[in-house]
Amino acid sequence: MPSSSTSIISKCTIYPDQKSTLKPLHLSVSDLPMLSCHYIQKGVLLSSPPQPFQDLIDSLKLSLSTTLSLFPALAGRFSTDSAGHVHIVCNDAGVDFIHANAKHLTLATLLSPPANFPDVHPSFKEFFAYDMTISYSGHHLPLAAVQVTELADGVFVGITANHAVTDGTSFWHFFNTFAAVTKAAGSGAKKKIASYPDFTRDTVFNSAVVLPVPASGPTVTFAADEPLRERVFHFSREDIQRLKKQANSNRHNNDGWKNAGVNGNVNCNGNGRVATVNVRNNDEISSFQSLSAQLWRSVTRARKLDASKTSTFRMAVNCRHRLEPKMDPFYFGNAIQSIPTVATVGDIVSNEVGFCAELLHRNVIAHDDSTVRRGIEDWEKAPRLFPLGNFDGAMITMGSSPRFPMYDNDFGWGKPLAIRSGKANKFDGKISAFPGREGNGSVDLEVVLAPETMVGLENDMEFMQYVTSFE
Image (cartoon, rainbow, N blue to C red; front, side, top):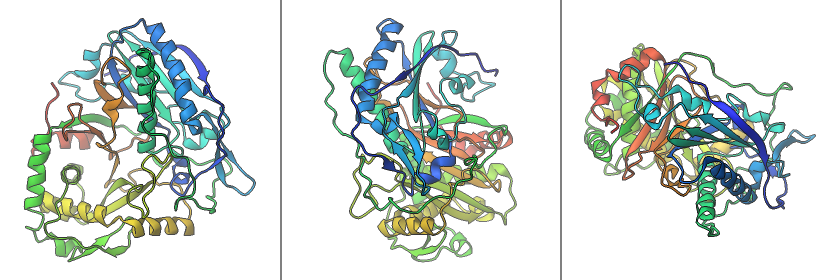
């Protein structure tokens, strides 16, 4: 399906409506590795607003200015000092605001793909600024941008944000606040902010260690031009519960543990070292771990890899609540670590889904305060950029979270119809998890795979039996 053209109507810089008093914010051990990642690109598809579109544009600009005063880090720029430390200078330099037009596209066209092309409509990738821009570019580019694209019968609001400034928790906090401020302004009320971002930099993630960066700047660690397919698979709560029951019922009913090196209370933590964790037999595998396990199993089978090859499933985890004492839940910045879970292809495909689910489950519950701190110490000993990609053809990387409040972005005329992303950080095996629109524990998985692997997944009946068709 050819991509359709989106035209830019106007572009301007939006500044905070109040001067920032924040001192420069030191990039943390969790921020710095993201300098080689693309800017985050996520957005919401909405029905047509009740007011004339130009009035909406004017309203969004004012609301964005107000919101930036609450999130001054996004209106700043990076600066590297003489010692090599990277900071966010909260200098009110502003963000880009883009008004775009794609009135030849309808909501039905975007959300109801033809049977012979069920992939995500390519036009969604045109609804974001800063395509394929590396986060290190925040030294000279804005740290965020908002693009509002007018459709035939709807609107798409896409936000692009520097990944070394925000993780998913901070990104959606900003997005939610922007929507809430806009909705309040439309009703003539002043929005009372329920939760303000926390910009403290006195956490365990703060470090004096310098990340070595090439003079020319870092480069992305994966091939950004490889052929890919992208689909969103929807899973209802009922189907996920059915899968969860299956995973929990057969988690111990296989002989793969011995071969996989999983024995008793032994677990491989996020740094590839062996750690002990007390896993009770009645400690239930979660719905999302079950769904992730089924995806790992089915994608691995679709890749037709040699049984002796090792496959890695990486899952990003929020560390705010894992530390003791806990971090502020609205800490603004990156507070994430990546947990790699490893098994041989033979073990993954020959055992039932409970095998992979148990591996993922044990790794997640083992990622406690001591594990987080050990990961930080390991990084400080060998500072490095985050190696994003599928380097051996057998990797899967799970990002985002169905717990993020994506559908809370009501700008004043109803909740979003869908969540979509741009071109950023996509490679064979990149998965993003979104909540389903109906809520209640439903999940959407945005799956990016090599074309031949996607065909294999679509024909994997074990996987597809849990997929619910969109209405």
